[in-house]
Image 1 (cartoon, rainbow, N blue to C red):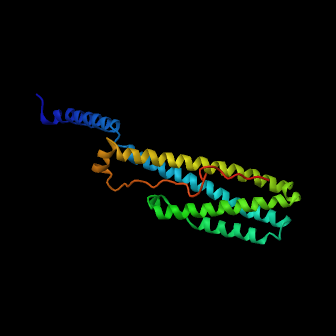
Image 2 (tube, one colour):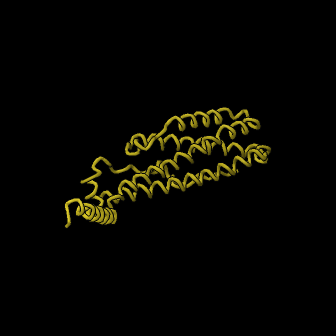
Image 3 (spheres, rainbow, N blue to C red):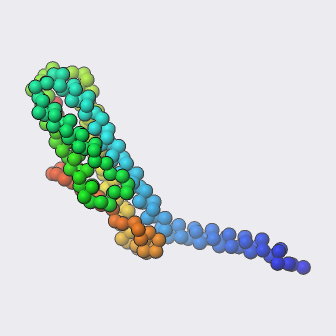
Length: 205
């Protein structure tokens, strides 16, 4: 004779099976897309910051090398040091990505450093010994590579933000956002702050 105790295990199996089916259907409907894309935005931004930091780390050695051959270019050297200091002082964590004012400040500071570095590179044209210095040539190569990495990181961030914003503004993402992720806002994107800002600066020696 079947008792209540013998029926319960079978009942739990059916409940578990039903739960698994529901979970599979929900995941297939994109319920996890919003947090997944949000994490991708944060990861892409970390790469942007990482590459800008890599560039900032090159600046002290670059300045010291130029100073060794062109100490009289003090104004240009000082401008680079000050621009680097400002650029590294503005940090944006993942929680600030939806703050357009902070993003604009960050972009402006990086733009100023790019301009200062371009002026420093132009100085080298007046010093043939500097242009042929092995340390300077190595720094030139690293800087060019870093500028390319910055361009790639920025592109990846822009694409990640576009994917995330599109998801929460279209169906079914818009529905899931209203039901489960109402605290997740549209993300600000990395916009150009100058002409051709999406291209790596040309560093010519």
